[in-house]
Image (cartoon, rainbow, N blue to C red; front, top):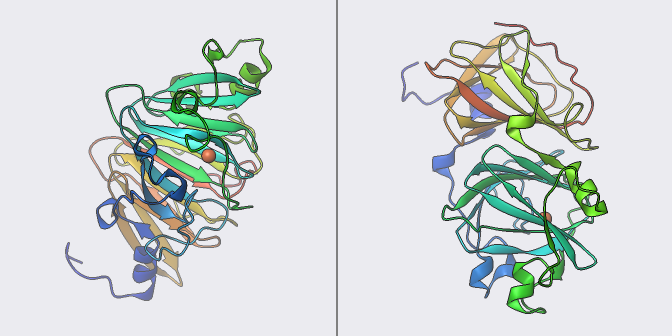
Length: 315
Ligand SMILES: [Fe+2]
């Protein structure tokens, strides 16, 4: 097949239909109705799997979620998201920039500064907001579980509270604590269980020849929804076909990744670049490989919190 041939087999078309290309999508500046009319709250969303926190569940350009959603959020310097909570669990993986995330309880707020490849899992029912204080815009990947997609409950929205209080997530002056993973305050202790620093997370070399950092799941943040890992693939490393009983998704952060599918002795592959995604449904035989000269970094979400069931074998 040459570069611009149109895939014709049903399997190739199905793989294409499960691929989200960054360049085929657009950022939506009107994904969150409660932000309308408040320029300080403006943010843009790009949907890959499901609608995430947006009510735009009918968007046919996104993939149907099974156990999790995945979207990108873009936020410019000086803007923030008002403190809210929901019944679903939500993870923020920072891709670019520095993001302040605040957790609030009874008027006290702990703020953590997250950098590229750091993550926080916002626990269910905990008041949380975020803000861009630095000079760079923030791009992050958000995933939520699809359990109970109720609208967020706002705690300190500028509609009902002074703008200064909303910007600090509900903390009056003197009530904001910088995050301290060893802090004694109950809110510090709680947040410490949900913040993941890329550099502090152990790098595990899989016997198949690539690195894994487990963000959510055994060894990372404990959770009852999904496993989330960051994979690092050296050039020319790949794995043999494997099958899961849940869906998984590869979202490329750096480099490129070739993803293959097999069914009835037919095979098809697709190459992903940065910010492209493939979601593979449960039961489908699939594999991945880095054909590039440089390493690739991939955010990997698996639709089950159970310990890994796949033993990867080098291809
Ligand atoms: Fe949220």
